[in-house]
Image 1 (cartoon, one colour):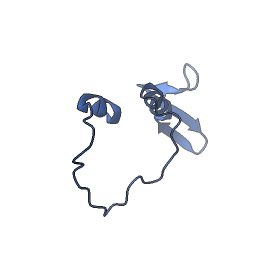
Image 2 (tube, one colour; image 1 turned 120 degrees about the horizontal axis):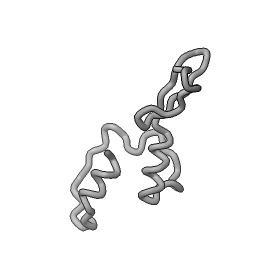
Image 3 (cartoon, rainbow, N blue to C red; image 1 turned 135 degrees about the vertical axis):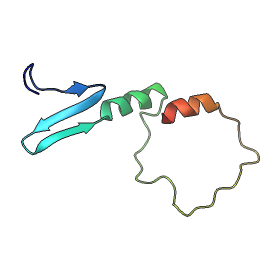
Image 4 (cartoon, rainbow, N blue to C red; image 1 turned 90 degrees about the horizontal axis):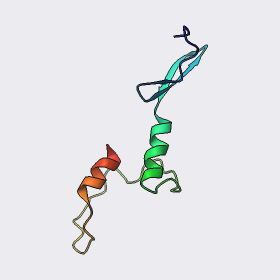
Length: 74
C-alpha cells in the first residue's frame, strides 16, 4: 500500500495505517451527513433508547418526509 505513499482514503473509507495494523472507518462521511441534515451540533448518546421500551403510535404527531428519513439513515 505504500507504492504511491500512505493510503488515507479508499472508496470513501478512511484508512489509517500503523505498526499495529490497518484501521478503516467512515467518520468523515458521518460528519458530512450530520452537517447536511443540521445535526452536527447534537450531543453524543451511547444508546438513545432502552432495548425493552414499548413504542406506541403517536396519535398527534407531525407527519415526516419518509424519503428524507431514509436518506439520513442510509
